[in-house]
Length: 223
Image 1 (spheres, helix red, strand yellow):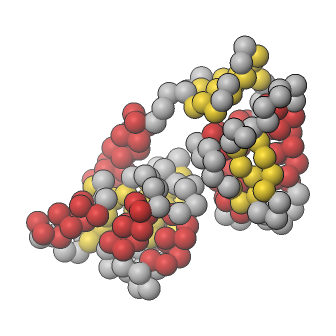
Image 2: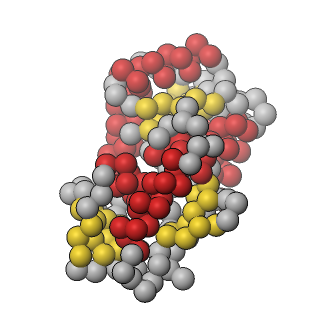
């Protein structure tokens, strides 16, 4: 699971990041609202931890823009303000949960786990694009009646494409999701893996699903 923490107080951010990593999560951090919004819009994360008071762009504005862009990632708001009115504002803006600072880490991580469970429960059990199907739980892929064998990396790549049908995914987005933020997206490794995947899912079929958007990246769609 990959989490995004948007928090400008470095001590708080380090505390959260270290604790979540000790729990086994991959954690990315943004120190202001503008960079946090940019990272969140990539759709790479399973939960977003979002502080309300942020430089450059406040947390509620970040949240509103995410929801306007149809980013449905669960958001846990953090704030020092504990009034009912503040909570209502946050929840009405699209937050899934709300936690007041200071907080016990045990409660914080329990709320994160609850959001992850909720996301898993609402996720479709089978991902489908045309006659291509992917079962995330059983890690089974098939096209029509034919089962397709994929390596772990190819499976993760296909899963990302199928969760974003019709959306152009840049090489940087793919690198961050399928590899990590330290991966050098200027290499041709991504193109190599996309070609591996294309051969396995499109070869022998009249309808091609994985398309190159020249100079930008790739998209999975039915023509």
